[in-house]
Length: 56
Image (cartoon, rainbow, N blue to C red):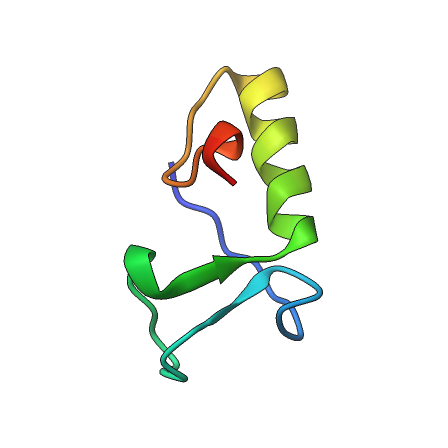
């Protein structure tokens, strides 16, 4: 499952800690909207994404 999301930085979907446009998982700082998307996807589609909410 792929998701395309857009946000404006750390207070939205999140931000890449190394400043790159394309970010890998260890460099991604999760924002609050990303957590909400994670929870909705898990609950509605029974799908666990890369970032687990329990570890945030």
